[in-house]
Image 1 (cartoon, rainbow, N blue to C red):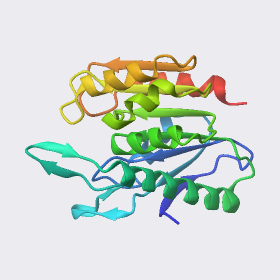
Image 2 (image 1 turned 120 degrees about the vertical axis):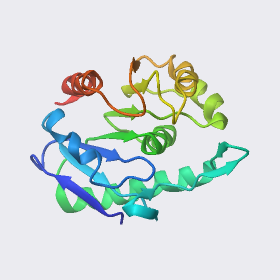
Image 3 (image 1 turned 30 degrees about the horizontal axis):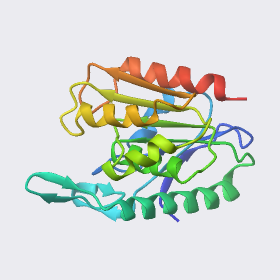
Length: 204
């Protein structure tokens, strides 16, 4: 069971799962609570401990300045999130309705959960991207689950072109939207407002 911090607005309400980025922790995205609709929120903490109180969902290897990610490790991280989510739901809520969201490495993990066919009410992918080997899978993905993807046009960590390539792979989905903002590897006010507006009509 992953470590977590949560807010229970009502055990009968849907839950928004938030997965933090590389080098961060469970407290990070919990700070988004004032900007979100009335949902239960659970922020899981990644299992790999890093320096300065940070954590990672999977390791990143560097080769000639390029990021090398083991896709199997992302699959393992996604499965660990789903296992922890099931246990958390059994302990704290009565509704099985859930949204999956993440930032950066957390968004990549959330996207893998989508690719595994998890039936969420929606996905919020913030400043992440699809691994190159996922691109063909994206194009053949069939789902009517709403997906919100956001990215900063000035992102120095995950290039905007990587997000665009991901958007191209998901663009055939009827309930998919891509939002770009003049920001770096971060979230701005307009992005948070758009996420709020994305979630509101999906809450019963």
